[in-house]
Amino acid sequence: MNTKPIHIIGGGLAGSEAAWQAAEAGVPVILHEMRPVRGTEAHKTEGLAELVCSNSFRSDDAQNNAVGLLHAEMRLAGSLIMASGDANQVPAGGALAVDRDGFSAAVTAKLEAHTLITIVREEVSGLPPADWDKAIIATGPLTAPSLAEAIAAETGADALAFFDAIAPIIHFDSIDMDVCWFQSRYDKVGPGGTGKDYINCPMDNAQYDAFVGALIDGQKTEFKEWEGTPYFDGCLPIEVMSERGPETLRHGPMKPMGLTNAHNPTVKAYAVVQLRQDNALGTLYNMVGFQTKLKHAEQVRIFRTIPGLQNAEFARLGGLHRNTYINSPTLLDGTLQLRSRPGLRFAGQITGCEGYVESAAIGLLAGRFAAAERLGKQVDLPPPTTAFGALLGHITGGHIISDDEPGKRSFQPMNINFGLFPPAEAPKTEGKRLRGKEKTHAKRQAITSRALADCRAWLGLPALAVAAE
Image (cartoon, rainbow, N blue to C red):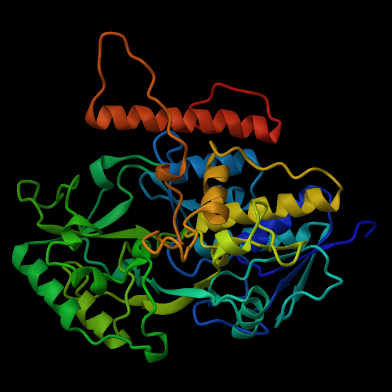
C-alpha cells in the first residue's frame, strides 16, 4: 500500500458502501467487522451488509418518491449496495425488495475480491487509535456497548436511543392460498414485478376487531433497562400502533385500499394483511409492517388467527432491539467529521438517518469524503437540492437542541423525504391551474428532475434528460 489506508469500523450497509467508494477512488481500506468474533441481538450470519429487519429498499420510483430518487442518485455514484440490490431483487410491486441472503453474499464477494480492501474480523472496542488518522465509524444501531461508551466519553454527550423491531417471516407452503390471493396494491407493476407481488390475507370487521384486541392483550417482551426509550415512528411494533386507536392499523399496514379479493371480488375486505416475498426462491414471505415485541408463543397464537395463516410455519419470529445514534448536528461538521477529532467520521444509522438506503447513502458520502482528503483533493459537498445533500443537511444541520429555544424540536432519526429538500415550483401549464394532488405531483417531479440534474453535475457526469436513472 503506497497510500495510507482508511480504517472503517462496521461491515453493515454504510460501512460496506464507504469501503467500496474509498477503494474505487484508489485509496486502500481496512474494513473491521466484529462478526463472527462477537455477535449481536439481531444478526444471524457473518455476512457483510446483512439485512436484519425488512428486505425492502422501499419505493424505486425516482420521479415521485424521495427514496426512489435516492436510489437513482446512488446508482449514478456507482453504489455497491444498489448494484447488489438490483442483481438480487425479488418482486415487490413498486418497491425494490431483495433476496436478503443473495444480497449479502453479493456485497461480501465484491468487497473480498477488491484488491484495495482488507477485511479484518475483530471487535474494535474503543475509538480508533491515533495512528488511524482517517477512520469511519459505521457500527450502526447495534454498536457494541464498549465502543458506544468510548464515543460518549469523547463527545461529552450521551448517545440517544430508540427501539426498533423486526417482522416475522413465514414459509410460503404453509399459507392457505384458497383464502389468500396474489396482488400488488392497485395492480402496480414494479421492478421485476408483475402487479401480483404480494400475498393478501383478508379480514372482515369482526375478525379485525378480534385481532386488534388480541394484539393489545397479548404478552409482550419487556426490557426494563430500556424504559423511557422512544420508538421510531417509521418502525413501530404492530401492537403499539393498535394501542393508538382501533382504526390505526386499517389506515396503516392493514389498509384494504387498492385490493380486490380474487376469490370473492364482490365483497370488500375490511382490512388486509400483506406478505412480501423475502427470497429469490419465493419460499419465504415476510409480514409487511408487522414489527412486533410480542412474545414468540403469542406471535404464533395471534398471527395464526389471520385468515389464510391458520397453519402458518414461521422461519423467523419478530423481535425487538435497541438502536443508538449520536446528536449529529451538534457533534459532526458538514463532511460527517467529528468536530472534536478531525479525521474521524461517522456514517450510517448511528448518525441519525433511518433506513437501509439512507444508511448506505451516508456511508457512500463518508467514503468519498475520506478518500478525497486522503488524496489531497477538495471535499465537495453534494448540492442541497439533491437527495444526498438533503439527507446530509438533515444530519449535520437539522434540529439542534437549544437551551435558549426550549420549544425547538430535538434531533430525531428520519428517512429521506421531500420535506428535507428546498422547495421547487411546479412547471407552468397554459390554460390549466394545478390543484390538490396534481399540484403536489408536479412539485415533486420538479424536485426530482432538479435533483438528478444537480447530482449529475456534482459527480461530473454528462447532463442527460432522463426521467428515471
